[in-house]
Structure formats: structure tokens, C-alpha cells
Length: 207
Ligand SMILES: [Zn+2]
Image (cartoon, rainbow, N blue to C red; front, side, top):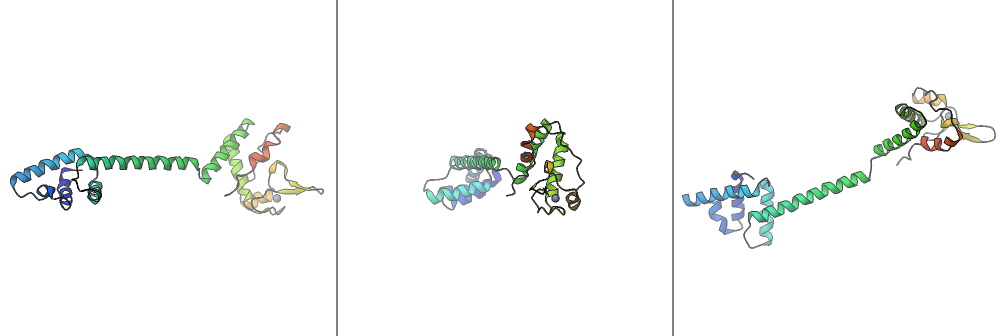
């Protein structure tokens, strides 16, 4: 609060409390001098507390008390208010951390997949580009095997229907999605990776 904010505050206080009347409405030179001095000392004590906040404390104070308001009452309320604000901000931050957005969890999934592919000797940027392309292709229905959006392409071996090798999509499905077909990016697979590939290439479940 600034010194020039104080006369208005004193007038508000005076409307509840007659002992502030000469500060709010000084009639003599002596009263004016005292009012000026008090305004300065209150401004110093209230520091950066906004005038509107101080006014709301005054109103609240006289709702509950018959004793006079003081700078320490206003200051105490301000400290409490600030602490509450900090706590709110902190708990909002914690909540935000606990619940990553869909976009964030998708990025997390991509990072995890890229790390896996990188471990197998692939360029992670290329791998992520590949994953994104594959996901975009999955958004359209396959014109060849009729796999619906979101489902992988299948091949009918005559004996049974199974996913296309490498969980790939039919070339026409790339075309239908307007995506340039990826060259085969997976290095020759050894048996031990066989179980990991479908997991890594499974897009996260849409919420
Ligand atoms: Zn297909």
C-alpha cells in the first residue's frame, strides 16, 4: 500500500470505528499532521499488501470484532492468504504431475518405444517417425484386408487369419492414408525380440 491509499482506508475504518474519525477526517492542522504521519507509518507496515486486500480485511475484522483494527491484523491475514495461495499452487502442480495429458503420455510411450528400438540399433528419430506414420496409417480402413480403423492389417493364410508380418500395414493402406510407405526399418529379428515387437508397436489405448 502507498501512503496516498491510507486516507481512503481510514475512512472505511472510521465508518465502523469512531476512534479513527480524526485520522479519516482531520479538522485541525494538528489532526492533519497526525493523519499524515499515521498514513506513512501504516504504509510502511503494510508494505506490498494491495489496498483492496486491506479493505476486505477491515470489513471482515469489524464483522467479527469490536476492538480496533491494526496493521498487525491486516498483515497476519495477508501472510495467511499468501500461504494458502502457495499451497494451492503447489497442490495444483502436484495434481498436474500426477495426471499427464494424453499428449504427454503418448510422448512418453514414444520415448519408451524409441529407447527400445534404439537398443536394437535404430535411429530413435527415424523410429519415432516410423511409429507416427504407422499410427496414422491405422486411422484409415484398409482397402485390402478391410481391417477397420484402429485395428492392424491381417492376412488370411488359408488356415487362419493372422496379423501381417512385423505388424505392418498393406501398401494400399499407406496410400489411402496419404502416408509415404516406410522402407523396412526393423533390423533382422532374432527370436528373443519376437515377443517385444507387437507390444512396442501397439498404440496406447485411446481414452
Ligand atoms: Zn490391410
